[in-house]
Length: 425
Ligand code: XLS
Ligand code: NI
Ligand code: NI
View (cartoon, rainbow, N blue to C red):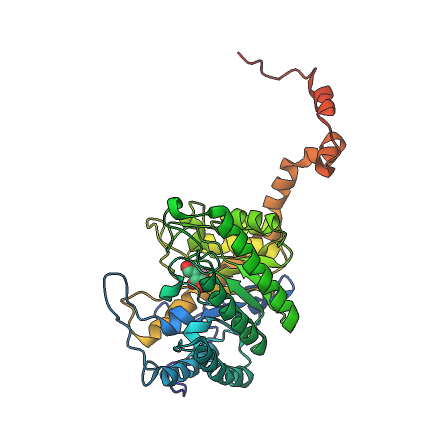
C-alpha cells in the first residue's frame, strides 16, 4: 500500500510481517519493535539510529568516480537543499520507524564564509530540525563536529601544530555543544580523523597528545557550564585518513583518558569496521570497552574482511550482531547510546528504495542477533562454562588474588611442593 509523502511517496510505513515471502523486502521479518525480550522492548535494547551524512549527504562518489546518487532533495541553493534534505530525512525516519538520528554540524547546514555565517546557517536549519523532532518524536542520538573535511584541518584539529587551527576547532565544538543542547542530543561524539600523523619526523607526539587532552578538558568545562546533558563519546579508529591515528583502538583511548584523568567524562563509540581496520576481530573493541565500563554507543557497520579500509557497509552477518548484542545485554543496555548505522548504500544502489532495503536488512540482522543473544544468556550454558573455568578464584588463594591481597611469598608456599602430574622431560 502506497503511503503519502513528499520524497518517498511509493514507500509504505515499514511493519513487522514475519510471514512475508522472500521477495517482500519492504517489511521487517525479525525486528518487532514492541516485543519484550528480557524485560525490555526490542526497540529499547536496539536503539537504532540513522546517520545523516551517508544516507542523506552521500553522493555515491568514490576516489575513482563521480556522483551516482541523484536524490531529489539535492536541489536549489545550499540552504534550500539543506531544508529539503532534513524533511526527507524525517520522512524516512518515520516510515522506517527509527527513533534516533545522528549528524555532523556541517552535514546539517552548509559552511559559510566565516564561522559566524556557518553558525547562523546552523541556527536556521536546527530550528527546522527542532520543529520536525517535536512533530515526529524522533530524537538526536548524537551530534558531532566535522573537524576533518575542511582544508584548514589537513594537519589536525585538536592536534594541529598551529594553535589558531586548534582555536577554530574549539569554537566549532562550542557551537556544536550549543546545538546538542538545543536539540536535546543524548550524546556528543569526537572522531579524530585528522588527529594523528603522516610522518613521525615532523610530529611532536607528546605535545599533540597534551593539546588533545586540553581540548577535551575545555569541552568538558563548556558542557558543564551550559548544563548540556549529552554523554561524551570518543570514536576510535586506527588509520584512514591519517597513516596513524592517536585514538587507535578501544584500549588506546581508555589508556589516554586514564592518563589524563578524563575517564569519568567520556565513554567510547565503537565502530566495528574501525576495529577490524586495527587488526582485531569484529567484536573485539565492543568487548574490551564494555569490560572497562566504557562502551557508550556503537556505529553499527561492517567492512569486508578481505578489504583493508573503512567501507561502511550495512551489517548483515548474524554471527557479528549476536556477539554485539550479547555484550550489550550483559552490560544492561546501551542507553543513552544506541546502534547508529554509520553505513552507506553502495555506489551502484541508485534507487531511493535501496536506502530502506539496506536499513531494514541491518535492523533484521540485529533483531536476529538480539534473539540469539537472549537465547545464549537464558540457557546459561556458556556462562556456566566460563564460571567453571575461573572457579579456582572464588575461594582461598584465588580469592586473595581476586581482591588484590595475595603476595608472591604465598604463591611460593602454595607451589613449592606441588608435583606436576606429568613430569617434564
Ligand atoms: C569515519 C567515522 C565518522 C564518525 C563521525 O570513519 O566513522 O563517520 O562516525 O565523524
Ligand atoms: Ni563512525
Ligand atoms: Ni568510520
